Image 1: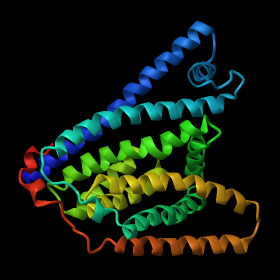
Image 2 (image 1 turned 30 degrees about the vertical axis):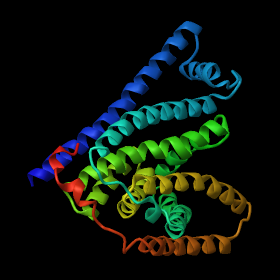
Image 3 (image 1 turned 180 degrees about the vertical axis):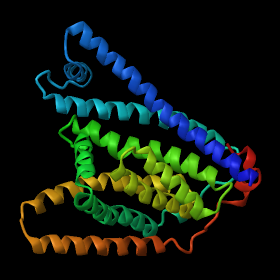
Image 4 (image 1 turned 120 degrees about the vertical axis):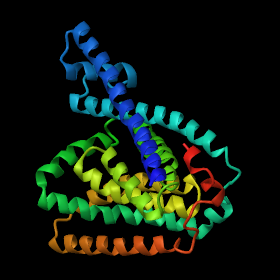
Length: 306
């Protein structure tokens, strides 16, 4: 029990640092916006547009919604960068204390790699069932999510920068924190599934909205499972990068299908998404026979593994 308490205390410290970083960065960026607004005699939204014009080359005539979306993504990118460097170094030096090193040849065999990428792609369609549920049962909450999701459109800012933040920097930063630091620490006090569920719930709460929170919790559990089975953070990183990247492919496909107004097509898509749930489960079972515990060397001094 004492070990579990110490473990949870460390986890709360990690998540507290991440949340505090977001608040501090938001406060600093808002301070810059207010200063521009006062100096230039602009509204707050106009000051955001001005800041984006100076920092990202978005024209002053760009609509304020796009400027606000770009501001949100820049703030997200800055937080992710600081988090990746800070927690990444912490994770690196912590792991270097132990002689265990993953066997990458076994972790990333062709079948394992294809299974991970398959989970990411088919998982996108499976998660779409949750979005459909919110759209039907809680339309007001779903509309709020849609407004938030507009920030991730490629026309919000330079597509290369957007893809870098969403598909690479964000996944790497979140994996270092939630799997490398939080899940790995939880495994010093809990068995695999309780640790995966706790880390998944924290991952969902970290997104701070109901729609993302629910599907991020599910994804967080799957990411922890892959991290456990591959015995390396690069396994969950590959899944996370592939999942975020495939979301843009799904957006393109959805855009094409929306042009076809057909009830039959809608039913077919729902059936396909249900089938994707089964495919994801089958692909996860591919890892069923892999090791289900961290190496013994990492469990010798759980209290000092911070």
